[in-house]
Image (cartoon, rainbow, N blue to C red):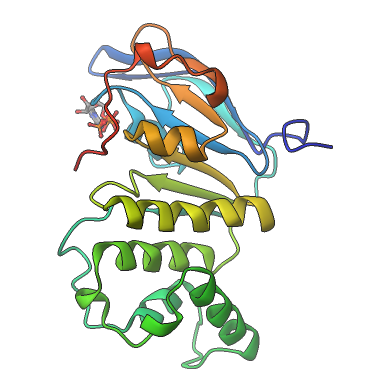
Length: 235
Ligand SMILES: Nc1ncnc2c1ncn2[C@@H]1O[C@H](COP(=O)(O)OP(=O)(O)OP(=O)(O)O)[C@@H](O)[C@H]1O
């Protein structure tokens, strides 16, 4: 069975969102397939982040529904890199392990330590584990956010313009790790991006949001003439 014929992880049916009597969009249909990368694209202000917020349960839909095939799906989020946001006096390894809910235990279990070591290696942070996060480069910090999200073995990862503000090398380093987890760790991904090069290189499917006629399809068939976006993420 190919990943396309597997049961989808998330279905969006006839979704509409309205603020102050104004519809952002209506009749939006899409699906997130297992081990697929879905790019959410569209003009500034069309409502991409609002849709992600709905997927994360932080925004009510005005119409339609979002259906998780498995309601216990573990979802994690990687934000946009913002210079000076990560102003923590923490080592990268300590920052990454903040994901663990350790309860009353001040230490990590052996399995947790092994998982941390593994994730730091996969995100190319092993040699940087004792570097302070506030002194890391933007690309390193973004990989630390990614490592933090991956530490708890999510089945869905949401990237909100996660490559914005990164140089080309750092963008591809980050997305290569995401792709590896899609292919080898059963991860499904939803990413907002204004970077068409990244979308074409890494995404399988796209959801083009628009006030009039949103469109869902395979990236291989994406007609880029409908897009105003360039190949650069914006801040
Ligand atoms: N809670 C809210 N109440 C009223 N309007 C809102 C609310 N949340 C978002 N909006 C409006 O909805 C529109 C879509 O916002 P959103 O941030 O989802 O767009 P976007 O496509 O992610 O934009 P960008 O590409 O610029 O990041 C904007 O005009 C925003 O001001």
